[in-house]
Amino acid sequence: MGAALWILALGLMPSLLSLWLLRRREAQIQARFRQAIDFTPIRTQRSEPTPLHSDRYYLEGVGYLVGDISCRYNARSGYIRCAVNPEGPCEGCRYYEPR
View 1 (cartoon, helix red, strand yellow):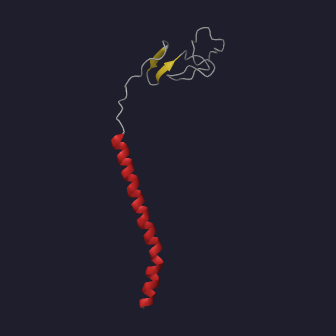
View 2 (cartoon, helix red, strand yellow):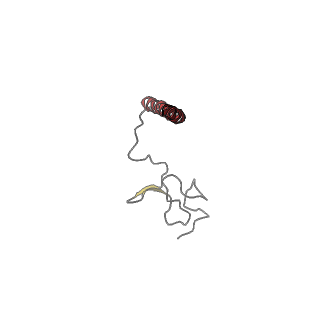
View 3 (cartoon, helix red, strand yellow):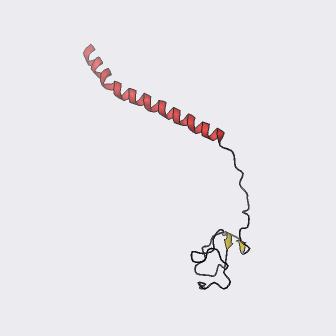
């Protein structure tokens, strides 16, 4: 009976050692995360983006848009107009195609 307990204990040792090492490593990683969070400066976000372009406007339910929304190539973005003429302007663009 005593030998069976020794064999069982010896069989469980690698698993218990692995579990202990895993828990220790997780605690070290969590401590590093907490340290990184503590030393990261808090950035404030602006509620309204600064207008980058003169033809930028706000569309209710969509957000800020740049350029002519009726153009087929308009990106529907507040930062770029389209893929073919991202710098703009839309007026006189040779790629303009109405929807």
